[in-house]
Image (cartoon, rainbow, N blue to C red; front, side):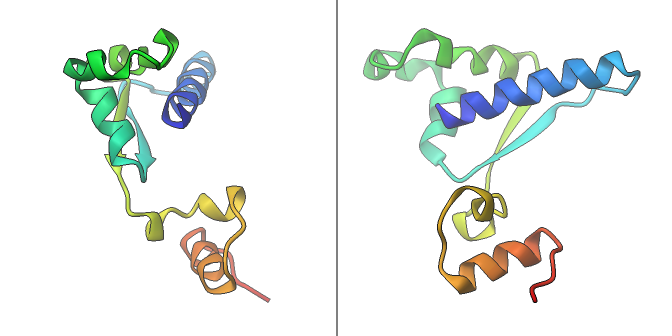
Length: 105
């Protein structure tokens, strides 16, 4: 579900940037540390085992097919966004800051 929310945001930004005259012909790459969410989005054959997931969350498949969104796996240790969303140990937080290009004090 988090991957779908990220895709919704990316699509909104694509439409907004297109309206401002930017080129949006290239797909937007979403990084995810959840191999399960990527597999679910890319493999429609799993539908029978995922009936509990609301149909709105399956819309990402349409955008994958249209090549407006690309999903790419990234290891949790390389996920810079975690410093914005999670309470992390100091070392992990500092590593995330370095990934974002932020120098610590």
